[in-house]
Length: 269
Image 1 (tube, one colour):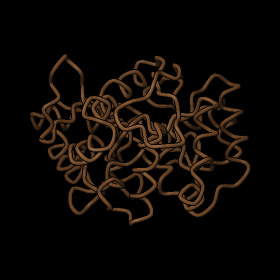
Image 2 (cartoon, rainbow, N blue to C red):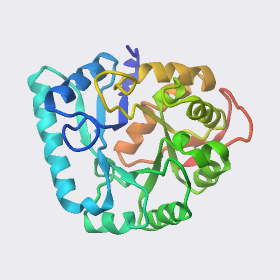
Image 3 (cartoon, rainbow, N blue to C red):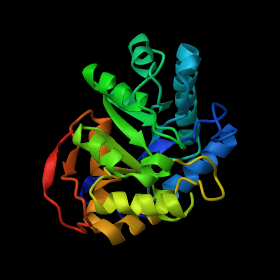
């Protein structure tokens, strides 16, 4: 269990597929509540529910997801759990995402300007950068979900550096640091951490058993071995807290080499 109660900072998981019956995450309320119990035992205090969202699903999906969050929160309280659940989505990257946001067919994280965007796994098409640029023009702050799992980024991490220099935040899966998604994802996750190109860690949990469980502590420990305990902690407390409050996230200057625990402040996104 995380011992991160110090200084009043909450442990927050901003990428989690705990909502039951809406995507490939929890299949039932019972399964979702078991995931909640696992998360709470691990020290997680806030979960942003981020079911997969495909633009074609539109408004009905948004309303369904919000209703399920309310139901999950009520059931968790009835079970004596103190977890807080927030609304969000993991939006598949596509040229229509900005339009769907404007029309209410997609929602950002916890009603803020931050939006979780999932890149393709096998390629990095040109429309991704145009999409995030259009989101920024509309006042949104994109967060790229698990870039370490994208084959193109595994082969060329400069893609991530260009995006970070343009104000895009990066969320890495804790499971990637533990080898749960394969050697290439693990290598990419560790290299991105070394280069100050990771801003938030999250579980991307889907199930109450197996490797995709809502346990964040083991990944934080792995990250601490690369960037130091304080920086690793910030990526599950301070940074996601800023996201939920719609505030700027402090980031370090990207580096072409391993920086360990060092690195000067680069800016506020």
